[in-house]
Length: 557
Image (cartoon, rainbow, N blue to C red; front, side, top):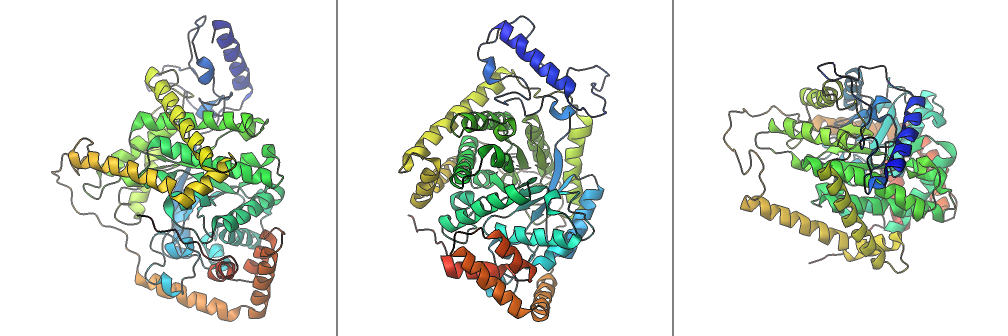
């Protein structure tokens, strides 16, 4: 790019920056030196390839979505939390909000993630242990008691039974008297990554996609601020993928959901802003920053060139980040505070829109109140003390970071080509479905995980406290233990709830939902009616399993 084009770009950025709202904050260094809101090539200098870097708030958004960077608004501190029953988790949420958290992120227990009720035989011993137990809308009411849902953005990390759980959230909001059009937040709903990595599915892919399409239509019409899909790379990376695989598989899944929306006749400029993303921040600092920058650039280009998006917001890749759970170690767990801080800083320097920081004890158990507070304060130290919020994309133009960004982008593009070749019609969706059926994704992730594990065992890759610097003075941690009484109480309450409700109304609502499933109608209104009747998650998922069957992964050797 020549000097005149760079100068014109800087002037465009300056006009947008001047017109944008900025926070009332001190944008100087610790020594009192005033810093510019963005930096670029020297005035009058040419910079070959600068169009791939650009200015903050301009296509291809390598340097961020907003001309102000974090001077306009900082990222949302969204701590992932949930354990025991709804009452216990409600107390944790109130603690997080009182301590400065900006949004809520719900962690569900394993029975809920699998669409089962707490009283089913398969749930025995798992209720409330890796998240909160939610059996019906009554639990969701308690979960958010005293928390006005119209004032708090709420993320829910669940995919297989995401749609009925979301309906329970909507009914809880109705019972608070909230206008549903005021709700804001994110539902994960990403079923592709379940088949690829996390394995928490219910049905065959096609019925899941039917539900997701219905949800996209419903939210576009009725709850425009809520994002019905958070395309998740986090679980792909946690399963052992490389950074480039995480990026490529995640964005490919996103393209598949774009194709789903278009197949429903939806306007890409209307529904694409409702897609958000969820990435892992691993411990290789610069590689992660490059991954986040490349993600925005790839998404914007493909949405514009392949899917016809023309509005700016449709080209924006907004993403939440969670620090890498897989990087945490049970050995010398206090070291996890350092790892988490480094990973969180990479997410911030990569321009994340919201962030969860893992607690030091999460490799052993759910976090205690104290460790959860340390994780929250980690974000606040980065936000308030380090000065990284003062400049948009402060590493932009670094030879190393730009080279890594280009390299990860190129690797991702090679993977997209391979996925398209897997399908019968050249679409991303067909390639994803064939890759799931053939075990293509899982095989490549397994190979990457194997290569890394070999490097650890040979000592080529070091993990402090595991295969390097093993001596320690640290004492054993006190960890959070969920009492078995939680499960007993949850089962008793669920039994009482089933006894007290109108069974005839529940049966009729479930039968109506199945009838709609057999038609071409949108399923969300019928599912909402079942939830209002206090049908349970297990009952709703159960009748759909009877109708659609259960997916079983083919054995592979």
